[in-house]
Each structure stands twice: as C-alpha cells, then as structure tokens.
Image (cartoon, rainbow, N blue to C red; front, side, top):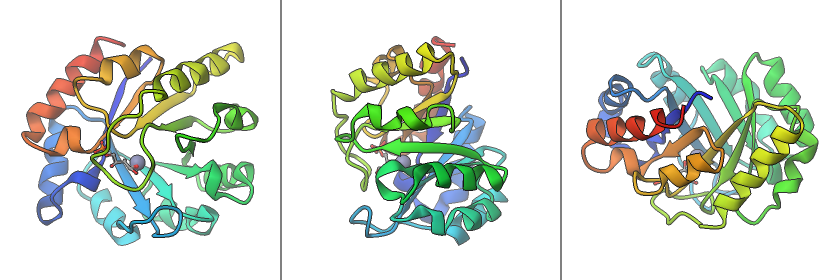
Length: 220
Ligand code: DX5
Ligand code: ZN
C-alpha cells in the first residue's frame, strides 16, 4: 500500500506559507492537509476558501481538505471549486453522511469521512464502500499540538479489519499527535495516510519531512 505524508499547515508559519509548503514537497510529502474549522463543530476558527485557492497555485501536492464544520454539505461544492483533491467530512457533523459523500463524488473529488475519538468505529460501517478514505482522529479535533490518544491504535486496527473483511482497500488516515517517535505504531495498525502538523512544521521542516518519509517507506 502507498504510504502518504499529509503535513497539516495548521502548524505552519503563515507569513511564509508558500515557502514552507514547498519544502515539504521537495522533501517528499505527497499531500497537504488543510484543516477548516468553523468555531461551531470545534471551538476554534482556522482558514477557508481563499487560502485554499492560493495554495492550489503554489504546489503540485494533493490538497486534502478536512472539514471540521457543522453541516459541511453547505461548503463541499465551493471547496471542490477552490481546488480540493479530497474532502473529508465528520460523521458527527452531517445531517446525512451518505448524501454528503455522494455530493463530494459528484464534484469529482475523493471522499473521506472522519470520526472523533469517542465515536465508535462501527459508526463507519454503513459508509465503508462509499468513501475512498476514513479518517480516525487521534486527538479531539480543534487544535494542533495535542497528545496522541493511545486507544486510537486499536481503533485503527479494528477499522482496517472491517475493510479487509469486505475486500475493500480504502485509505485510513490518522490525524493528531503523530511524530517520528510514534508513527511506526500507527502504520503497523494499518493506517497509510499520516497527518502531522507540529511533527512537520515545528523545527527543521525539511529534516522532519525527510525523516517521516524514511519511516513511511519501510511500510510500503
Ligand atoms: C486537529 C487537526 C489536525 C492538526 C494536527 O483538529 O485536525 O490536522 O493540525 O496537528 P498535530 O500534528 O500538531 O497534532
Ligand atoms: Zn486535520
């Protein structure tokens, strides 16, 4: 399976955002993770469409949009228009998650669905054959720099077994508190898309990215 690093720009320095994204691209990161927060589904507010449009012109990396937004259906078409390559909605935030996934597909974009740490993994069962990516939050969504919740490991393993039982090869993305020190455990449980904000953007971005990529390649 292809192992992917998705640096989360929530932890980037926005006055030199383009430069920092370019470093992650040169060092091998295939995606850019784009955290949209509305101050309702999560307490904080981050960034939205104009920033996504700017990034679209600045990198060839796939733009992985994570909507931490109440009723994300309202914004799917607009994020697709601004350049999203994948859009992930929260199961907890949608009126009808299946419909939201269909809407994402109708925009020609890869569809993802996410659950917060306290939402049972079984909640995803109705959508296993309706999305290309499943995002397990390994921290409470809303802020970068939090500690990885250890129970997430078992949740990843469980989800991978539910997909395997059905012969489905979807991506499992994991988001929150992932660093060089714990990424191997996450990969071993069956995840293949790794989000990291602080682990990439705090300190030497090039070296942080290269070190992540070296570990990821061992699991391909
Ligand atoms: C948290 C966001 C994450 C965040 C991860 O709600 O969804 O993508 O940027 O940041 P780190 O890697 O610092 O935990
Ligand atoms: Zn995220």
